Image (tube, rainbow, N blue to C red; front, side, top):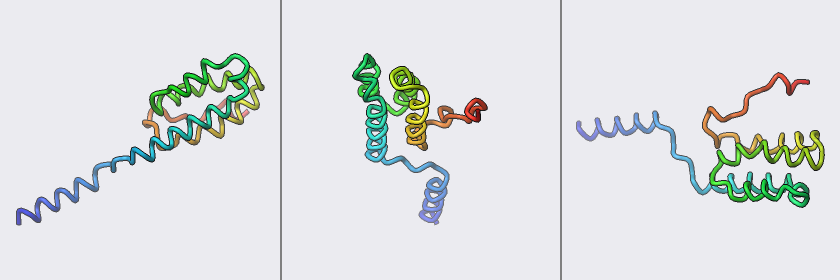
Length: 114
């Protein structure tokens, strides 16, 4: 009876808790995003935005990369135009899906509909 109770409790606990993410897969995704951001601003790195590229390379985690999106977009917009920056960052932002805490996910903006 005792083993059935323990087994039932551990099964219930297993259903209610989130599975632990695979750290190697998460690290691989972070590196993929880091590379995508670096490649997106390749031209900007050559003309005065090396400091942004360095911050992307040295970002400690996924949240740091998330907050660097604005700096990367500014670097691209300054060197190649805002439409190019918006298009490139539009391809990068979805890469963060499922990696960030809920509060950091981007929300739809009424300005993006224009």
